[in-house]
Image 1: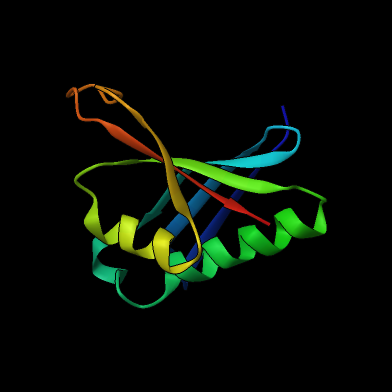
Image 2: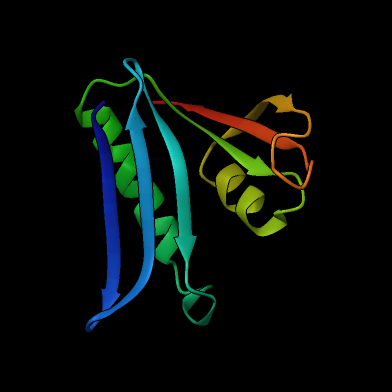
Length: 106
């Protein structure tokens, strides 16, 4: 299985990371996280945009992901980058919270 794993650093400190899996015609964004001390600095948006460019460069048709229903800031970010909600996975997470499935066409 091919994939992408990127980190962002301030000096030697890991400030954020992105993990995506190549699923044939799309990339599946598995995880995008930023250290709380470094949030609201554009790190997540920069990594997400780089993933979209990489997907386009590699002939992918879309990027898909799941996000907790309660994660308003992530949902706002994804929507602002063109992602749309396409499905719901009930009780997806260990604590039984639903996942919203988002996708964007490239």
